[in-house]
Amino acid sequence: MSDRAEMKGPGARQRRTTISDGVKQQANGGKWHGGGEKPPACPGKKDEAARSLHNNGKADREPGQRPTDKHNKPGSPVDEISEGLSCHVLQESLLSSASGFSNYRGILNWCVVMLMLSNARLFLENLIKYGILVDPIQVVSLFLKDPYSWPAACLIIASNVFILAALYTERRLAVGTVSETTGLILHIFNLTSLLIFPSVTVLTVTSITPVGGILSLGVYTVLFLKLYSYQDTNRWCREIRQAKAKRLTRSYSCPSVAQSNGSAVHTNVSYPGNLTHRDMYYFVFAPTLCYQLNFPRSPRIRKRFLLRRLFEMLFFMQLLVGLIQQWMVPTIQNSMKPFQEMDFSRMVERLLKLAVPNHLIWLIFFYWFFHSSMNFVAELLQFGDREFYRDWWNSESVTYFWANWNIPVHKWCLRHFYKPMLRRGVNKLVAQSAVFLLSAFFHEYLVSVPLKMFRLWAFMGMMAQVPLAWFVGRFLNGIYGNAAVWMSLIIGQPVAVLMYVHDYYVTHYST
Image (cartoon, rainbow, N blue to C red; front, side, top):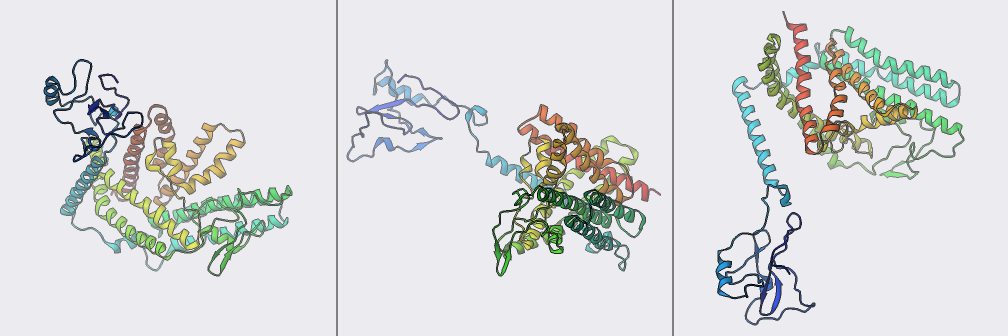
């Protein structure tokens, strides 16, 4: 062995050896080198090979021990003096990437504590300045102007007309009394009316509040996506039947295995046996946008799981309402004057002040909707596929975020929009841009129509994701790409909120 220690990568240091009583041993408590023979035992003393280690695996040396070299013999006075004065070894600093150190849990905890303290200060400042603003009664007025008139609820109930129209059209197509061309025209008319009818109603009926309009239009948008998938899947089944396929492929049907829940047994169905009211309304209420003849089913309803999700739904709903009333509304109201006066510095200050509560509310809403609510509905219906989201928080690109934070929408876009465009020979980049264009349309549809004003802020915000995705994918990666995604989420949403609130305020309350 050479007289110098050799370093091989982070944390892989080769220690010098110590020779004691004619037996060679590693100073860091390593392996014996002596033809596989065990070291001789020393009666009355502990084996020197079992010495305690400290300082991240470094051997606890004594002044009288020093590695041998060809100049100094072990146990000589020079060795003893030199060893007693040395205290350094070849090693990197822990914060250096070459050290190989990766345990930064304490720093993460520190960041969490600092975040909690800073938000606690902001919340306390809000209470001192504005008092308690939480008012559950005021929430009811956001949905109802007249307690005896529920136009948004009536609009949602009227959606059953479009559901039944899609079902009966498919029944006629299954028995052949309606041609494929006529059926396609009927479906197009039904789906177009599904978007036009509620928007016209919201724009003309003055008693529908903005919140009620957003809720009803959200229901109709979900129904539009579901019914589009419904007619698309049944058309595929007809094409397979016309091709004299003996059984449906796994893409459209689960394996024929009976699943039981007590006395109830779920058996697989085949086309056109799926065209029933029960099957249709199960799909309407199921937490998915993509239709298939046989959904994966859980074996039973877990009552404790169901109650936990119900408790989370109620708790986080109250928390969301309280945070919006107590934290966001005063900040938005104080932001109107800087925007009217176009005071850029104060606009930026208000934007950054709004970013914290807005982002916190968005995170709570994500958990409330995608985890608590959708799992509650899935457990109640024994819907087996619970992948409603993936690890979007680790996104290192914009496209990864949009593909993983909302899995039901992503599956629908992939199955019924993106892949059909690729099969028709459309360029991949054009198809991706078309997906963002469709998403931008529905974002603007869900905001502009209930507010009864068209400013295209949501549309432009979604379309801005296309160049942002290209920039982040081209120039940023790893933690820098992830930071860019978080920055766009934290800053982008408050900008859109302030734009719409400012325009709504100027339009309705400027006088």
